[in-house]
Amino acid sequence: MRGLNKLHVGLALSILLFLALGYWLVKPKLPDQPPYLSFSADIDGTKAWKELLSTKQKAVKEWRLNWKNLPNGEAMLLVALQPSAVTKADREQLLGWVRKGNDVVLFDRKPEGWEPWGTVLAGEIGMGSTEVSTEVSANESAKESTEERTSVSTIRVSPDYTPAEGLLTGRVDTPYRIKPGGNGRVLFEDDHGVLASRIEEGSGSITVVMTPNWMQNGTIDQESHFELIWPLFAKSWDAVWVDETHHGFGTKPGLLAVYPAWLVLASVQLGLALLLWLWLRGKRFGPVYTPRAWTVRRGDEGVHAVAAWYERLGYQHEALAHQQLFLRQLLHQRWGLSPSASALQAAEAARGRMSEAQAAQLARLLEEPPASGGSAGPRAAKQRGVSTQAFVQRTREMGEMIAYLEKE
Image (cartoon, rainbow, N blue to C red):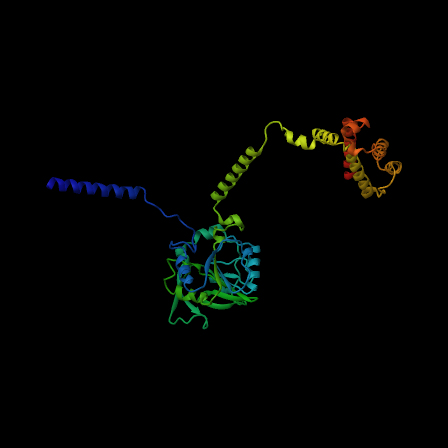
């Protein structure tokens, strides 16, 4: 019994050791997402703020298109957290959208290119508020570490901004402040300058906050960060959009944009294969044979069959008369020639419209056919000299003349 217990203990320890070594050697790692993503649960993401905002607003969604495609309408909010690669055209499109009656809250450590705001270094505010150039040397940026820049500051808020009472503090990690003396309404500031300002644009407003680090999952519950940023979203909007376009997660508009790239590629290849299969199935490789039934109905064989039928009944004269009547009606429609015109008159009218040979052929076709002997039978028809060959020849010429006039 003791031997079995030792065996079981040894087996259990071996399994645990195997699992521990496997976990240590092949430890799953979460992908390192960029900071300020609204769907990131990392300490530098902002998912906690977004989830709380979703319980207070009607709709909170991600915006992954260019700012020129912002939805039409009003009473909407766009939140941009430390956006990168914002162009002048983007800013102009956003300002136009704000003037229609929408709001923007921009969190940026150093907002560049925005006309209503300028930035100054915290230490230069007391020395004339000199505006800082947007070109910062790489050496200066390398010397500044996050620990050196971050400091706990006492925050002074506007009386009508937040009802929070007591001392409010926050960790400020930017050396820049909003340039004082502008048209914006100051929301809160510290001893070194303005940290948040709001300006009206048309029917909407733009709010700039210099402390985006307060929105991150790992810092939103520290100091007084939540009490300072939450009043920015106290208003009720029809829709709240969180910008992810300038975090590298933009998409192109269009019908195919909602489908993954691999699915679109597979569908295109499948469609091409289907078209090739249909082409192979429908393509005729080899000679084309004319069915005999077609030649019987529409070819010379059909003319011979009709001629033989008229010959047996003795109605060749009537057939030629019908064709001649149709030809006269066609001349009346095309040239305005009277149906009772003589063959000579028709030839005169045709000389200006067709060749001499065709004019002579038309005059011959309009001459009176052989005398009728309809009820005398085939024998009497043969005695009058109306042969099948002559009937076929005249009918063919009459058909060619009719086809020529119909195409004229």
